Image (cartoon, rainbow, N blue to C red; front, side, top):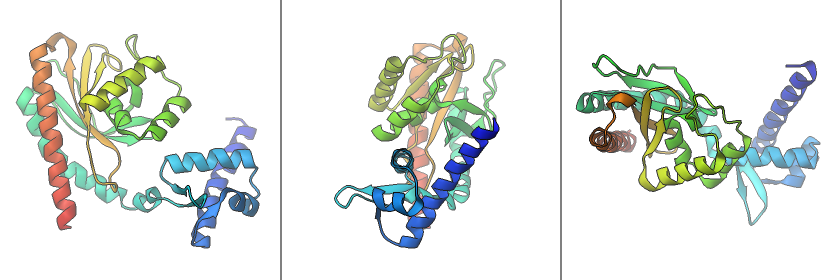
Length: 261
């Protein structure tokens, strides 16, 4: 990064923090013009900044009053580590049962910027397996767990992702064509199941589904990874059923834990 790029990055970060501090001090909503005048940010730059923060949930926009206020994502940040650990504690036994039921590796993933991050996993006992390791990162568009998370996003958040991402062709099978990717995500929204067919790891078929969690949790998904040489219609159907059962079990337990906390 050049010196000018570093300066621009710092300036952008300063503006974000300035907006947060201004709204926190105001204690009420402020219009675009009020924010721009107070912080002396050019109108065009401020429009892009506010739109991004609204899409990410760090600000809310009230249409009748045309004002911005601090959003729920800010409040949820401090709760995230505890929520993630709670999610892992609930999900790991479910993943282990899922893997035993179909003898294929499975994982719990969370949204990490424009990637998914594996935060818990269970490994198949078969000789030929896909090793899903905690901390592994993968592009959202290239893996089943990532596509499942994308399909669950609101239209605004999904459009922002699709129009600001450079889609890397990780393997010859990676879907980078925007219309085709949109079509796949629409199918995933409809069925609740997303696929990655050798798009991130050659020889591996991924099947994933998003978790429907309370707002205090990050966007997450679970997936199974099956060697292509072993995939069949029968195994795929079993995997989909097992994923749906696991999704239901995780969501039910978490809602019960949140309700009784």
